[in-house]
Image (cartoon, rainbow, N blue to C red; front, side):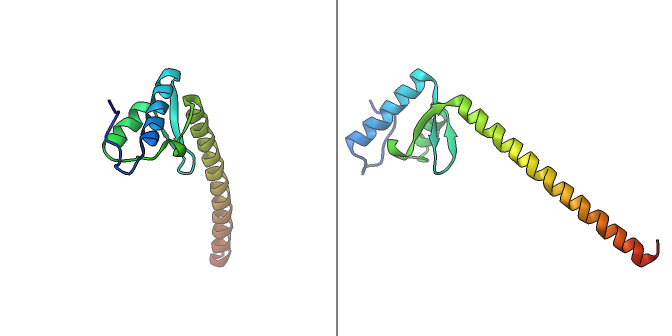
Amino acid sequence: MRRLNYPDNWSTQQRDDLDNMFVIARAKELWFYANYQGLWFSPDELEKEQKQGKFLWTAENWQLRKRRDFFQEAREKFHRAKQEYEYALKRYMGDAEESNAEIGRMLGI
């Protein structure tokens, strides 16, 4: 029995390949990753989405990766965003101080 109702234009091989990926993912506790979209799904999450007609992509579009990679990637994004925020804040505060000093000079303060 199939995991879900696949699109009619999918070959039997395409259906089997994706079904096999789910078997492997569950057996090895791996997650699905779509590189070009940067999307991560546990097997249960992806299956739920696919049953709703979303993310119905053939196996070639998915990689099976360790779920800790998902966490590490999220942590790296967090640190990069934090650094960018701190840099922007430093630049903004520097500009604000210069602007305040200029206004003070103009007002004779």
